[in-house]
Length: 282
Image (tube, rainbow, N blue to C red; front, side):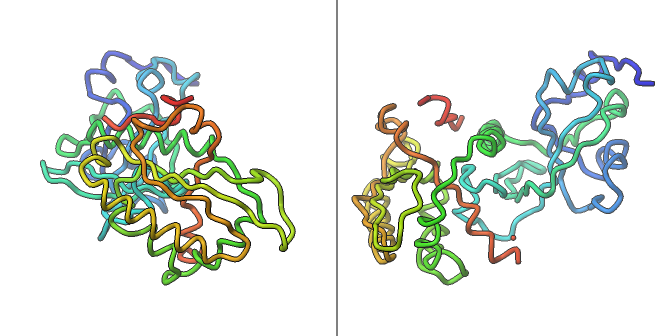
């Protein structure tokens, strides 16, 4: 039968959303993972909300949720800032050094909370507040994803599917790394059109205010490249592609647009404080 846990002990041990653990730091929790997933090279990041994590009731809150985070060899602009629905790259601090790690929805685990009063998170690994905000946004985006018409996806897929495709390469460039998201105003927004009917699209590349102001000319030029590339797709009429600060986009404009998820970038490979912009503008 489930038993009560000592809430204050769990809290004093330092457990909270964003806490990290490894095989070495916290073997009690590591051993709760599925045996085949116990990678000693991984860092596990807890994503359960604080109130659930420290709950005394093991019956009402039996498990915690965590992700395996694996050090990444290189940054990928399509995987930063919660742009990709299935993968995320964020920096963490390990022994006071910044390390870029890669998280995947397929590497999400639910393990018993029972060991929490008897163990502590890793002392030398920390998820910075900015990375925590991005992680939280990535998790919430998964439940707010809006689909695009199949006919539109088919028309742009020749620019995306394959490592050397032009739009794919553009969306993985360094200019994409700090980008908060790609947003589309599609006309018509939901219909699957016949081949002789074009989609009209306006694209917004959304950056944080400070990031955009520091390098606006470069981001504006990058937006033009994306516009030229999209215009080469059959059946796509590009009304414009603009880079813009999140401080300058209106609520009305935001509500007309939908976020273009970057998960299409993994289809062929796999053979698969930052503001919560969506909440601020809704």
